[in-house]
Image (cartoon, rainbow, N blue to C red):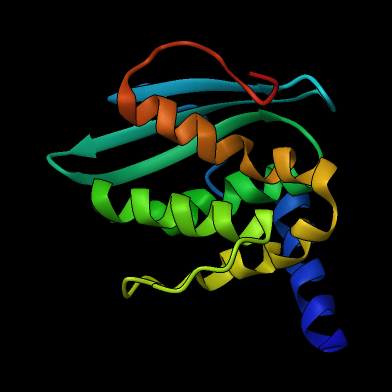
Length: 151
């Protein structure tokens, strides 16, 4: 089990240092901003949605390694997914990082997102890991307000 945790830690550090899809997206159809006042994480998430499918996703901002890695892996995971699949992944990821058992995977494996399984051991870091995901929900709903982890 220690080897798996080491692998997960390395994946998070890699995405934290070299985030994927880290850029603005002028042609985005939806966008939202997120802020974690507890540790200062800030991000803007950009989505290009075609019909019911996320065709492209990117982000920009600054934050801790967990927040940045979560946003980076979110972008890799969601490209090409339907809006319904994005919602299922949100729920599964949220359950993972908050330590809730999830009985039904609905056919969508977490893949690299499983690297965040240890976050549930550190409740203060849950907000770091979920910031990008709550920002995603705001972008998809078109709410247009800044998402805060303290609301």
